[in-house]
Length: 107
Length: 412
Image 1 (cartoon, helix red, strand yellow):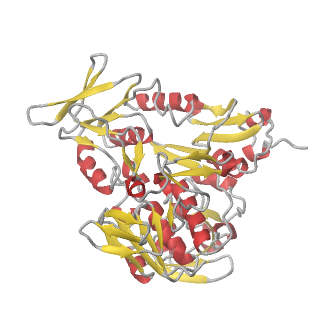
Image 2 (cartoon, rainbow over the protein chains, first blue to last red):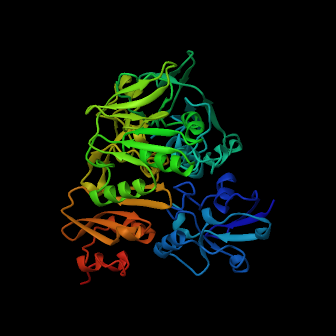
Image 3 (cartoon, rainbow over the protein chains, first blue to last red):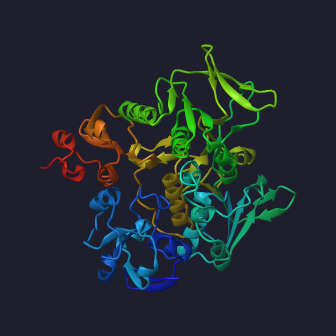
């Protein structure tokens, strides 16, 4: 299974194995990683699973849909590498992926 | 306050499950007991009318946390267990079968259930309701093979199931008593848009239609819905989806103050200082609307109340009031609503419904109260951020969908 590293806003990283075809959000949920709230459960409705994708992986992830881009347009701490983790499907090409969680998702 | 060593949660749904996890991530190390009447660990209900029904999501994907989480985090679960009564004086609960447990703090997250209407024929075979995974599993096979389902009630669940039926190659007829679908929960432009959209997809939508009985065949299977004007609407199955009622009987039995739901304050506390409640079952104050009391059936509402209770029990500052929000997916439409249109006196539609992408903005004077967004996620999130701040808006800019909603604040 691909390994994914989740890094909190205060730089604590956790590396876990995430099943192919599940989402990067599912990986956080299943391993009890805080910082990806996913209030809507992965319906691309709430933008509480916002992450910054490591530069090396940006091009390996299919482009965001209009719906995801629309939500990202409105998040307060958007960067060029911003994605919604519920919309990133895990596959072998994402082995070693590193995502950073924004401070706003810690409450 | 003396140290809390036991928190017992009755109701293992989205609200109860998330609250249990919030206690652990908030640093609580005492005992957590989570009791649910379904034989499942907590799972999300919203996909039951959508992706789960269409086999686009598995039960495992619906689970809030994997099974192992509850073991690792020492959350004791009693699943498939119904609580029969609460004894507030002894701080005890009695489970079906007689087991008695004592609690330090009790949190009621018992949710709501579908409203049952006393119609002749309501006990026929093929008549469903949709609340649990078991309900969805019973509904799934019927929705395939081109069968036609009658949705009794034109609310969000009825419309979502209609969209799922069409997506599965089946047929659907929505029967609504009011003059439009979503009459109580959406504005007229949104109702009208959705009615047109569903009809274009092949759903039959009947409004101003009062159901009087359900008709069965000789084997006792529902075959038609009968209306008060004499019409007979054929169907292969029917779903009763005319809203929900709070599961507040336990609370009433314990003498807690109830008023169409368990009455709680902004820390989730009931009229008993050791008993809290959250989610669909509660009637709660809304600080953004002058603390008026509401019973809301939504996931974000339950999550917000879970945060309020966790903060109170863990001695943390009370969280800021959240803007209420709701969402629905139908076909390729994403409907997202931020805020409630209470006291609105002005309505502005941004964008054009004919494009399948628009927002209905509700204001009181120049103050933004609520936005119903269809395939307009930036309007939704913009509104969600703005509404809590109660800013004065530039109405011309609000009406111009080329200008971001968050840039439509009146300057100076």
